[in-house]
Image 1: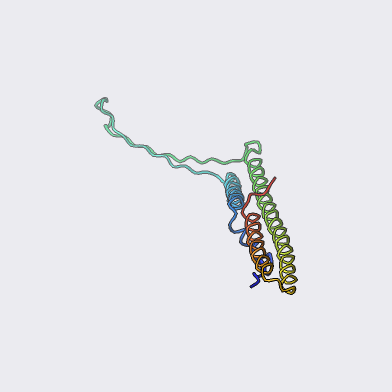
Image 2 (image 1 turned 90 degrees about the vertical axis):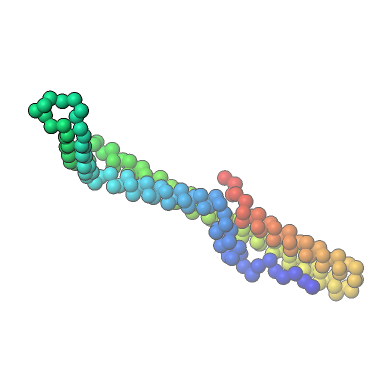
Length: 173
């Protein structure tokens, strides 16, 4: 029996590779972290309100002073005259987030290209092996037919392994 084709198309293999690549997951998480950091830097332009309170006791004191005390305060910080520091930090964080997004996108494209190339090579090799098998079978040599069938099977499993490696190996660069 002839082994089947490697796959009908490369798209399912590409999707699987994009889903299972740890370096791509790291790149996407880095992008997400950079975006959240940029959002945090953007929020620095808002005023900050702090409430402070304290209570205590005075063990050694003058008789006319109370033995307990308490105080409360409100602190409001308005970020208006800081020389553009917060705006510059926000812009830097946004650029870093955009760069992380481009890195993740470039890695996705590279992974997809590697898988598609491996799929095309494997499909071509399997086609050649099937052609040799059919020609040998037509000639009617039983021993040779069996050898070609096992070679075809070996070729197909080797091609599948090649595709899997293309989808799982880290991209060069």
